Image (cartoon, rainbow, N blue to C red; front, top):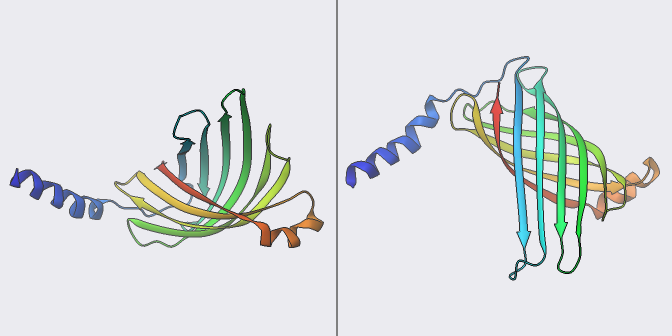
Length: 171
């Protein structure tokens, strides 16, 4: 048992240092993100998933497209869906296996239970590489919703936070 514990601790602290997370021009990423929630009787359930594809124009600058879909299933009702399509530009800080980033997003929200509108805002996060091609991503977006450019300035104060946790693959 002690040997297993020692090997586990060594693996946690040594293997990540063997990973190289440097991005190169032309590198691409695919991320899979999911979340869900239910009430205590499992009658009202929300599930959402997102796919993100990114391309590096420089070793630090990435452009992304994200497609999300959410399904809302309520007791006594049918299922509704909502979607979002967003573009992002992120700047990465190369700290080896840790890759913090900051950026901006802009996109569009649509679906059964949402008012179709534009969305924009800043984002930040960090990617942690577990090997040369696989990483875990934690991020946060501050999104504000507006129907046209005239509303964008006023809508910023009424924004929302969106948390992202996913797995990604560099290729």
